[in-house]
Image (tube, rainbow, N blue to C red):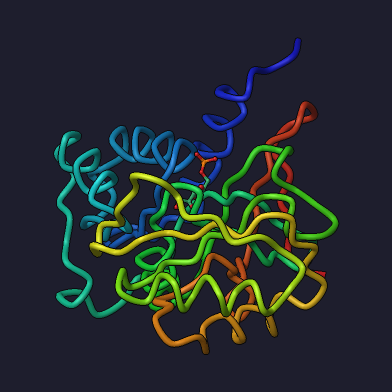
Length: 223
Ligand code: 5RP
């Protein structure tokens, strides 16, 4: 029986429940796979104290299920952060931000002790970059950042039209990259004045990836 992409997302969302720490806060990501996780969380919400959300959309979905949502600065520790990815490689470095929530995702991931990435098999790639790399930009710096991104070379920066992040900023998607040193590129783009953050999660990769395949949920750890 072939599972649909939706069924694969539900399977990894369910598998991620095994990583929860009872009585603690869980960090919750953004996107369609994270939404499946939120729906699974609703079933076992008595086990957790509450959640920290990486976006307003996830906050609303969590609250819609009656799950308490805490501001990050009111929380001392997040044992586990569960989120999807647009691409992930064997080192568990990721491109994220297809939903535009990359900065808050990066902040919650930085606080979390463990990052559990949940993804369907289509997200696993040999080389990151086929998915356009999102960069969150302070609006007044748009022209400068676009020119600087173009000067790095290898990709084409394109403004995500009509999109404003939860932080009131813009997203530039860099298309056509082939990223061989994700840690260096993440740092280099962050050096551009006017960049808030970029969607490479290489300095802080995932600790575990639960990957849904036709043969079941595989657990990947970094090479
Ligand atoms: C949102 C993200 C998401 O995790 C990423 O876009 C994957 O989304 P989906 O689970 O819908 O494929 O980074 O900013």
